[in-house]
Amino acid sequence: MLGVDSGAPISAIALSRRAHFGLTGIPGSSTLPARLQINGAFNNVAIARNFRIGALNLVDEPVVVVDLSGSGGASRVLQEQEIDGILGADILLPTGAVLDCQKQILILKMDPGFPGKTPGTQYRGLRSVPIRVSETYNLYVDAAINGEPARLMVDTGAFATLLHRGFVRRLHVPLHETPLSSSAVNLKQRGVEIARIRRLSVGSVDIVGKDVGVIDLEGLIHSDLLRGSQPVAGLLGAEILRSHHGIIDFGTRTLYLKK
Image 1 (tube, rainbow, N blue to C red):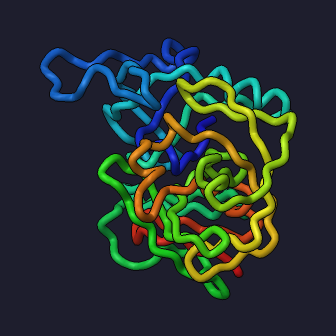
Image 2 (tube, rainbow, N blue to C red):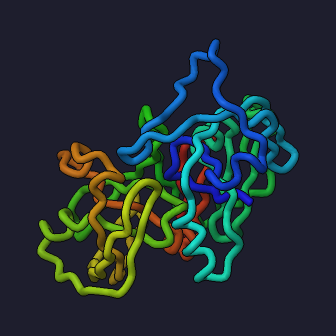
């Protein structure tokens, strides 16, 4: 089973499952890099000879091999099946995928060049928010936190919406400790605090009186982005995407949300 993670620029397979899936190394004649830097650390790149996602079969697909044991621990606590890997933006964008976060349905185009909207997807009553895609395949939407302009990284792999601690402190919003912690690939566990945000706006959708997690996002998001004129203030996570019927159209690079 693969987790769908819009915040992952490249698809990954768990280190513990590399032999099981028969991944091979990068051929010497290949122009692909043998290693990629993920959150400040290097991980090996391998080749999946046949990468089947439903009826779609990708041949000789490069993937990064990462230690997902932290994700496995969280899955056991939540009594969920441990994932074998992560389906990232490097596959979701070129296949023109559509992800319905509320219904938990992923649709991939067999022919991404075929024009028109994906059949069976309803956008009635939803607000559209343009998605900006960086050169490194990160997805961002314009937002505002208590009226302060910002951007949020769209991250379906984040269990909840998380704001950067430094950004929240600049707004002078009180922080409250919790027993929770969060981690990402190649990064240590970090404590999560809670802040009450008066108004969190994503495009034209306003979310009023929202408790959000607050964490140090250094290392996960480049420091220049955290401190820009329109800084990346955090991650737009699964709980908002589900509760506001988020639909991510990777083909048109649009996020749809219910007000």
